[in-house]
Length: 276
Image (tube, rainbow, N blue to C red; front, side, top):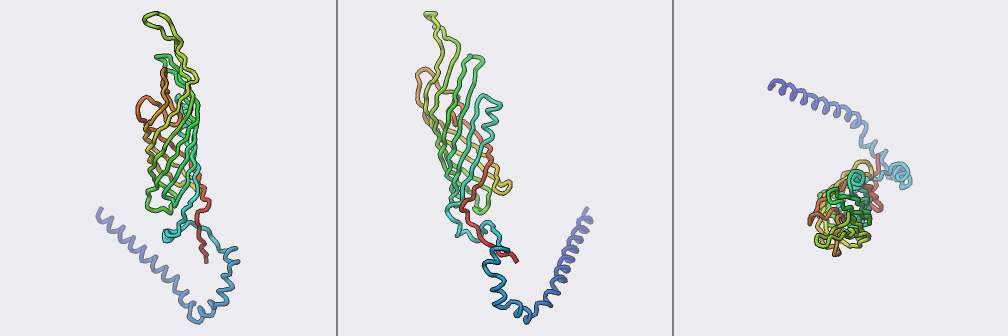
């Protein structure tokens, strides 16, 4: 085994020496051709001025590329928008009793601070087969917040972030079930709380990332811990599901998103490189 490693190391050294020799041999004719007189003749001020005129550079040799790391001081405040859509909420609607249809618009400030608006529509239709109680709600919601991209290199298109959200929803829900019998008088009363109005708000702590897939198309995920702040009270029922927040069986809840993201780099600064 040791002998095999020695042979492998020797081959690598030989390949490196051969490559250096080939590079040197390729450069030798260039050295002979680039004599001081020829360089002085070919690179006269008039010829350079003629060949590298603004029109010729713009028409033939202009290439737009992102900012380089050495130009950090020139990074403008406005770095475009991102438009995203969540696919986990759609999957939950298809395979569970509730879910969301939602999208987000996020602003990039120096690719560090990312204010965001999330809009969506929450749907729930659940029946408890033990109690026979059915709960229905369909209503919009909104979340406002900001993310902080903590990656050191702000000139790449990938992001990893933490953030906060404040969520709000006003909705009407229906809660119905079989009649309830009074244990004392034996009378039955309908269990029907249709059209009950409620308002809820909550906070979210967010951690997530996004990765560039192709050009301006990204994919990413986020993990969220949601804290219920308050909901309007009702004397006879409590909302089982809050649009945008989730199920209310516990004080706090976890949720996640998987997003398809489109980077809209309007106004993102570019630079010009002249190719030879």
